[in-house]
Image (cartoon, rainbow, N blue to C red):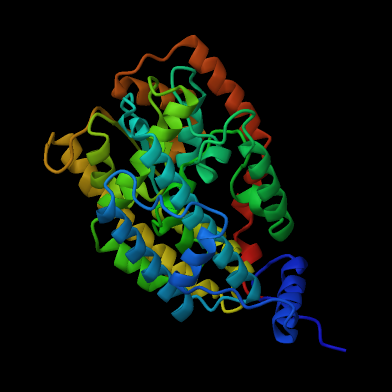
Length: 408
């Protein structure tokens, strides 16, 4: 009788260890094959049952070539650095095949309906800050205002329009149900809802930006390569997806409230796509961000790698926080100085995490004033309702969860 899988030193559900054992045995006896992370094999899998063309769309060969380079770099890091366990390898293969299949289908849609990419958009409101820095709270308060538009969780991770009735909420609900089985802590880390306003992390993942991947896999070479290069191709892809989503949702005329922590690294490239955007910088004490981010990343990595190490994760989170803070400070300084190159923007506001905790209504009123936006009674009522939902959410427990991920 084979031994039970050894529990991971960082907390994870017992189901993860059982799945690792089952997958390893299935590969060993030939019941299934070990998933490939070779880019050519991933493209081949993505094309099965999908469009034979459709890679281009938008800027065509220039951007798809860069997309292919991003994929190759990520796959190299996954094979050489991530130390994926069987479940992690299976998840990585599935995620990347889904991204490539989605890219093919979006490209085919854009070739068939190029007018989608010309959808006129109201200048968005960009919530910019650190992961675990209060950006979700700011984002959802602003998104509660009926004068604004927001991206649903299901549309972030399934950006291809699917007709009527829209099956994407059902797809997202099934995904979340599975994720919650694998990761019982997920809702204490981030409050999810299939049709609730959420960050556009799925759109950046679809463009192979590093943010969704470095939070679950140890891929430092891919992270650093991404940090050192021009992210413009990623945000051209992001803008195409936003235009498609807005055209499909019929809300292109309302300012979209956009939020992903990756914006803190890449703000000039993002604003180049939306030069009239308003910007809200969300600030939180760096050490508080590091502690909370380490907890989140450890939670994700422990599921997919048996080599996840809390000390290494904390060091990388601290490095990332320093990098993003420096880039935010630089962008904020140029915005406040009215420097038109390379950043051109609308109004700018800042909000502190502590001020939101102390008196959120006053903090949000100051944001509206600085952005030159009207704060209506209807908006305040909607925000109060959002705050009420948030106060009951399981994510409040995350403040006490850091020690849960310490080594035994």
